[in-house]
Image 1 (tube, rainbow, N blue to C red):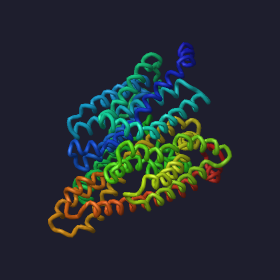
Image 2: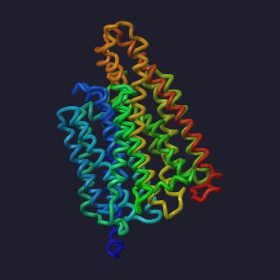
Image 3: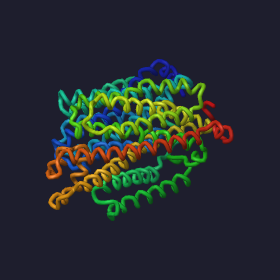
Image 4: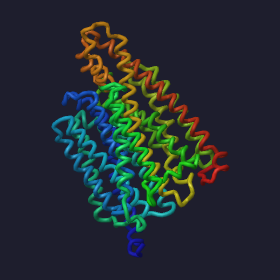
Length: 512
């Protein structure tokens, strides 16, 4: 590294961090805003339930699929170049979403947003790793986590306010504004860096990885529409499994793999990968499902729904920092496991609350879920690089980030599919007339997607109260499933991240 770059690093480091944080802030706002706007989008475009699911699934699919390849591209072609390309793509797609003429184009643009988000996050993270060292690097990356927490906490409230006053299209303009500012700063202060040891990009591995996630998401999204035994759905799952096998083969037979699978021999490293997956089931999926319930089923305004979502996400502003402090004296595995148990308790509590009750009754369980999820959320980024040998920390961080983002997309698709199936079962239990049975499939999917009005119009003989009861039954059962999965994950984390596991293994430790 040249002395001039070392000097500019000391002078421009805060500005570089600010630019990356601005770009990062746009991601959770877009993620939560899309969910809050889904009801209004569905009404304007008369979208099917499957099309509405792709508003979020499309974004998360490309985000998760392209994050790992983007990190490798940054090493080969330049971190600044990949960051700028991602910011530009995200800003253009966000601006274009304001003029989307229909649901298909909107979903295409959401997918482009996700690809831009992946490049921006991967390039920005790699840039920060070069811009800062030691404790300053740790603080810089903690700022990225704090930024995501702010976006998740305030995103629903901001989006609800924008939708109520300016319409749903205005929420995407926020991403354009943030990224234009980030781009302006980055062009002035960022220096280009590359990894001199990375001379080739693993295109076959990248394509196999993207295909595995892509076909899995398509299969999960289409299963409630076509049926789980439909040949097209089974074919998508088969192609996904085949692509995953090809990816594993490639990564174990090349010199510079995208994903170093040998790290999974460390028990604590496996335990860390469970943390983002568990928080998906306990917390992230609710960021999508609850706005659909609050607006489309319970009839709250987007602004009121945003206020309610604040109860779920506000703990992310403080609890992760508290968890990091407590981890100095309490084993991180116990803290993370305890937090998941708290979140599971909140899920069980929420499952007992049906539609139509007072808003105040929802605040308690939402706060409990957000508080519990905040403990693993605040610990997992640091754990991801401290549970493996030091020379593997860079690859470990890349794998963790990929697991974190990819699991969000897959989990959302799985949970959406499960809710649709549970809703269909609940609706069929109440279908008594032959005349409505032809519409029951799509009506149930619309109901699961939070469009009670459309479901009622399709199944008019059943009536709104019956459909609301069917939705409540399905949503309650889903919350039971999420709570059980969270509890199982808590047990696995407690075992895999135990001090005993750390002392008997070859991996490094964080705190005992």
